[in-house]
Image 1: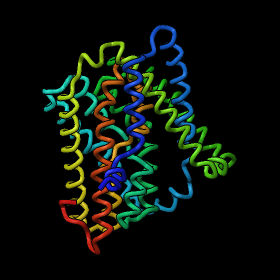
Image 2: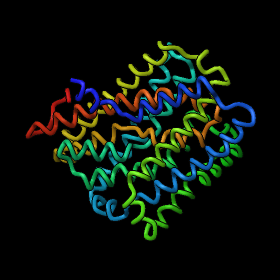
Image 3: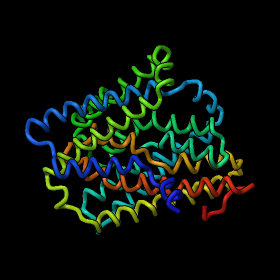
Image 4: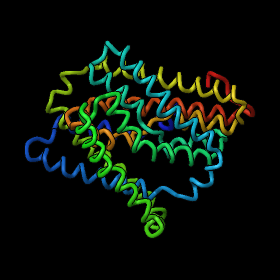
Length: 328
């Protein structure tokens, strides 16, 4: 039983909880907060540079032929999910307003890459197509998530000039390093692939530092006076309902379209997941630091919930010869 629980529980979440605890007890203040903010900007640049460098063109081309499947995943991530997010924000009257906004924010994010591919592989789905769909979602998310956040959440200001400044800032912080990393992949890709554990630690370390920085700013602004355990539990419940709706909708839609089981698996896993790895730096680039901590709480809760639910789904698919039922 303990082994099963440890397999379902993401160890990185423990590190995130520890980082939030540290920021709550010893937040960066004054000149320390200024230095942390500069370093956080550098961490965002590094994260998206590495994301671009890790993106394999061959892997994308291998799954590119299933363009209908990729479009379905993108539509789920950036159209259907945001509609659910708007509904979640509207019904989340019992949670703090910033937490309700966090539920909307998580609905705007791209799919995960590693876990979506891993679950697709376990379930017996089309792995090359999953690589293509998840990678494409990550790329589109660099553009789509900030634009959706500006449109639906007013991020970056409501005037045209403010919105343009926000888009230019995001392009400089996210798109340019991503493009630079991908362009340099022919020269540095071998090093990246040979040192995946090291690159992974750099990735996680950068995210943890960003989490510390944004939660420090939120704590100084009174984060824990604005939310309580009830808010966290409500966010968990609403997030799980959103995930369940997407999982059931993608199942029914794939069956109605007569898609193969392998494609159904890709759509369900790639379309239903939301990326914490992308969500942290995107939030730090889009929103003021004091707002980011509260916005990320629903995403951190959702992150663990989706891993546990999709892990059970993947194992159920793997033990069945035919498609899993709605309960999967």
